[in-house]
Length: 252
Length: 301
Image (cartoon, rainbow over all chains, first blue to last red; front, side, top):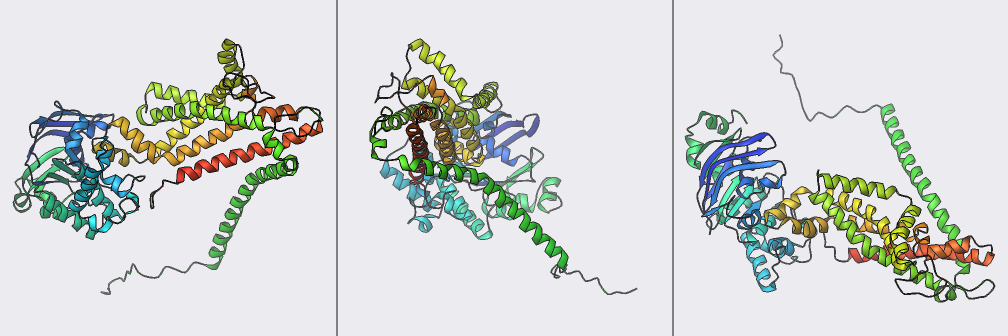
C-alpha cells in the first residue's frame, strides 16, 4: 500500500541556481497527484528530491523536510533505502540494453543480491501483468533484450521494473511524453489502475493527462508551487491568476 | 485593389533543380567516395603486403617439428619453436591476468568515481604518459624493479613488464567506453535502489563490455609482439621451461635471436616464427570475440 508524502520548506539548488523555493505540500496516499508547469519550473527537480535522485548530481543540493509515511527521507534513511521504497519512471524509456526482458523486470531485485528463482518468476509475471505487458512479451521473456521492444512497450517494462521491487510510491517524470497517443493512453489506463495500490506522483506537460488521471494537481512556476488543489478545482476554478493563465494557454 | 487572397500552398512541388547543379552534386559525391576508398586501400595495402610476405617467406619452413621441437643447433634438422610458443602463452597469460583487471578497475574509477577529482586527473595524465613510454624503457624499469632485487631473469618479470604496457590502453578504452553508456541507464539502476558501486559494475561496465573487450584485445595484440621489454626480463631460453621464476622463451625473443644470426636456416625459422606469432594473435583475438558474442541477446544494442 502507498504512503502519504509530507513536504516542508523544501529548497533545492543546482550549483548556484535556486531551482526550488520553499515548497510545502501534502501528497495523499493511494491517489495520483499531477504536477504541471512550464519547462524549467522545477517539477522534475521536485520529484527527484522525493527519492533523493537529485543528489546524484555532484553540484546539486537540497534542504528541508520530506516525510514518507513516518520516515524522514533526508534524516532517517540512506538514499539507497529510500529509492527501494520509491519507484521511478523516467521521461525516456531506459531499459538495460544488455539484459533480457525478464532480467530487466527483476533487475532491482537481482542487482541487490536476490536470487530465489521461484519468487523472481512470480515477480516477473505479477509486475508485467500490472504493467499490462505480460500478454505481449510472455513468450520472449528470456530470449529478447529489453531494448528490442517498441518505445511504448519499453516504457511499460520500465513501469513493471519499478513495480517489481514493491514500492510504496511511484514517481513518474513525464512518462508518456516520448510516446505515441496509443501508448500514452495505455500508460494512463495503467496509472488509473495502479493508484489504488500506490501513491503516484506524475509530472506532465499534458494538461488533459493531468485532468484524466489525477485527483490532485499542483502548478509550479519559476521554482515555486503556485497552487495545489483538487484537479477539478485547478482546472475549473483556479485561485491564482497565474494558474488560470497557464491552463488557459496564455503562456507556457 | 484586388481582393484575391494570396495562394500559399506548403505542398507545392519543389522547384526542379537545374541540370548543372545535379551533375555537380553527383560528381562531388563520386570524388569524396573515391577518396574514402583510396584512404582505406592506402591503410590496408601495407598490412596485406606484410601478411603475404610473411606467408611467402615463412610458410615453407613450417612443419610439425616447428610446433613440437625446441631450437636445434645450426645444421641440425628438426629445430622448432615449441618452447617459445608455450613461453609466449605463459608470459602473455601472466600479463593479461595482471594488466587487464588493474586497467579495467582504473578505467571504472576514472569514468564513474573520479570525474573532475584531482586523483582522477592525475591517473588519466599518468596513463597517457605511460602509453608513450618506449617499450625498451619499460624493460629497463622492470629490470631494476624486479629482476635486479631477485637476482635472476624470470617469466614473472616478463609478465609484469607486458602488464604495465597493457594497463594504459585498457584503462583509457575502459574509461571512454563507459563514457558512451547513457546516463539514463545509470539513473535507472540508482532509481531502483541499487548502490553506486553495483551500478558501476553490473550496469555500466556490462553495457560497455563489448568496447572494453575490444580495448583489451588491442592491448593484448600490441604486447604479444613486444621484444624489447622481454630482453631484460624474460631473457629467453633455448630449452623447455614452465617455471615462473626462471628465464623463459618467447616468440618475439626467438625471432629476434634468429633474425640477427648469420645463418640462412635461422633466418627462415625467424620468418616462420613471425608468421606463427601473427596467426596466434589473430586466432586468440577471434576466439575471444566469438566467446564474448555468445551470450548476447536478440535486439540488444
